[in-house]
Amino acid sequence: MGTRNTHHARRHAHGAIRPAAIAIIAVVAVLAAASWFLIIKPHQDLVDSEAGSHPSTPVKAGAEKAPPPPVNVAAMSMNQLLAEARKAVNEQRLLAPAGNNAFEFYLEVLEKQPGNQVATDALRETFPVGASVAEQAINQRDFNEAQRQIDLLAKADPANYTLTILRSKLDAQRKLQDREQQLASDKERQAQQQVAAQKAAADKADADRVAAEAQQKAQADQRAAQARAAQQQQATEAARQQAATNTASTGNASTANAAGTHPAVLLRNVPPRYPTTAVRANQEGWVEVTFTITPEGTVDDVKVVDAEPRHVFDRAATEAVSRWKFQPATQDGNPVPSQDKRRIVFKLN
Image (cartoon, rainbow, N blue to C red; front, side):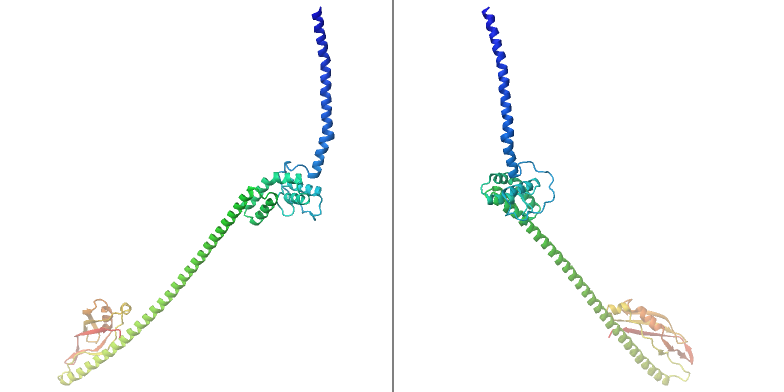
């Protein structure tokens, strides 16, 4: 009986505890909700209104065209500067454009209020992203813009080692561009020199060709003049030989018998044509020919019996002799064929 009463009392106590626990939990929940709405949320709204929300809030993926910068940044209030800075962060204008970027707004805040926690935290948290933006400007070889951005980062955190890396990269890219420009300049200068050398060589070749042609023409004219002089000399020699022959014929005629027998007499001497190849080669020589003088006074059966040099003047000599005209030889007053032998001399002067 006593034991049953004890169990009953325990169950009654447990039943009394459960409502009390529920009540405690409800009170805690009400207090938490009240704290949120009365303390935490107003404080967060205050921070958002002052700083334009926290700088670690995700930035919009696509950056739109930057709006025009504020007219007078120096005259702006703290809240206006923080709002402009947050707007620039959302639009991914961390370091650019100049005069309208988050870093300059935050730095202006620190000038007005050194140690401002919102600006200090924002600059510290966005510094790595700003360094990446400056590195992109270096890689794009926009060196002036990259230098401006590095200087802006240095104002935010002058002791940051990232600045040393960025400056080294900027210096290396500048030197690389200088080398590339120097190489391009050297290549262009070499190409110009090569073109100039080729033009000079072509001009020299043209001048040499013109000079050679003029020299060849002068030599050809000289050889032609020498050939004409040689032909005139041969004609003179032939005339002299003809005069000597006529004199001899006259002497023979005085001693000839009354029947009228005398040798053939040359009436027309045709000088030989000096071969062009011999003129060009500056060659001289002679040809001995034998021929028959017909009763009509023409030349027939011309044969070369000797020549020096061989086969150079043969044709010119035979063609010239074939055109000679004679008074035929006579025997007892009648024309008869006769044989003759002559040496035709070819000389340039």
